Image (tube, protein in one colour):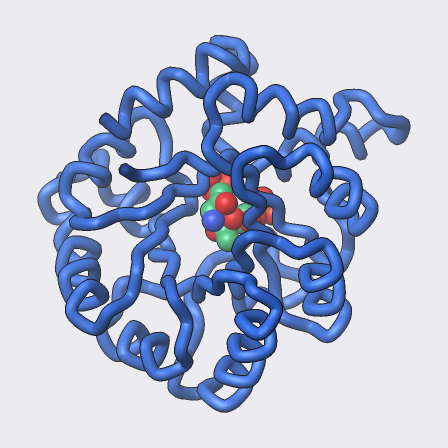
Length: 237
Ligand SMILES: CC(=O)[C@@H](O)[C@H](O)COP(=O)(O)O
Ligand SMILES: NCC(=O)COP(=O)(O)O
């Protein structure tokens, strides 16, 4: 079964645009799970442009599925995710001023750092995932770190999908076969949507989880959050 983890960053974007607490991020986490989400993902960035540290602590008690926290493994980030006992931590190589996540790790170039971070998180019972491009060398390096999972960065797939889905999926299908071969479990995310998700799901063997936020929250403006989550779940059948 491939789990749908709803990324609620953009709920926090809307809330922060006016200050106050409307829409409530905590209520969104509760309702997304009520509507069928099999996980909640947040990406607390250092500038707190959307999800804040406070959100992370407030969301944790209402998680009844799985809590996936994404981010760059700074000391502050690591202390927070260990303190809240995230179910999964997805390590992302983002710099502070990036508009969004736009590349995977150079795993071999950061191997000692990643090994130390992953070992520390796993000592606290946290499953780890490393954000990677669909590149066998990067995936081999990920396996070397001891991580249980990788997350395939799917923006290139989403961008090329409208131009030809067979070509778009190719590197990801190859990467998935390789990841399975080296014993890594596979997550995926970034720019997945109602148009491209089902084809991705059908062509990636043993896909454990997709984390989807931007397009899903945008769709919910027209379809409503409950129907939107059901539509995304239907793409994973
Ligand atoms: C890691 C990744 O691809 C996304 O989960 C990321 O969290 C998106 O971040 P923004 O919502 O800040 O664009
Ligand atoms: N890891 C991907 C994620 O959580 C959401 O990415 P997006 O759907 O907001 O592009």
